[in-house]
Image 1: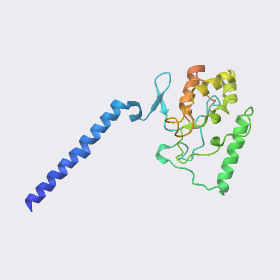
Image 2: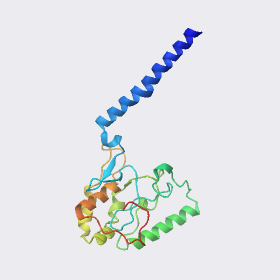
Image 3: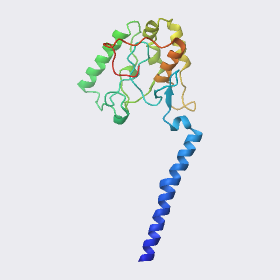
Image 4: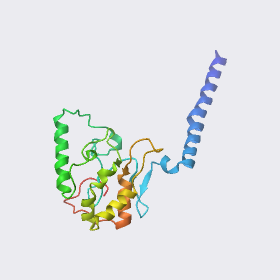
Length: 206
């Protein structure tokens, strides 16, 4: 019995060291060496080198000078600790009311933008953290951003089109733009806009 217990303890110790210490250290080291940026969360930095978010998680942009992402039902919006969709069905009155309110807000904030409004701007993702937009949803916002930054709309569109990411491996997924990456590119090209007045600011990083 004692011999069997000692064998079991040694096997447990060896397994613990291999799978609980050495393997995690090896995989973490390999990830840091080969994919350091992604292993650390795909963090995005502004022109001053400050971390302003992750390219993998959406966030709220309050200023009219920035591209706005999809609606989020995760916590109070883009909450990585509460990733989820609204789980509201197509017959839900709450969903219809929320979409109608978003449409009214978008029309008010983007009076020069053409109709119809792109679907992505009024539909939330399943995770509530989607950091990307279809190119047409970003371009739809170009008139508002050009007016807020006091630059020609064509110049805004050029930056947007330059940031379009194609399908992965040429055939997976759809073309997209990363909202945070695009907004950082707008700041780099045209400078940071003046902050919103305190009474007009809402939750967000910008």
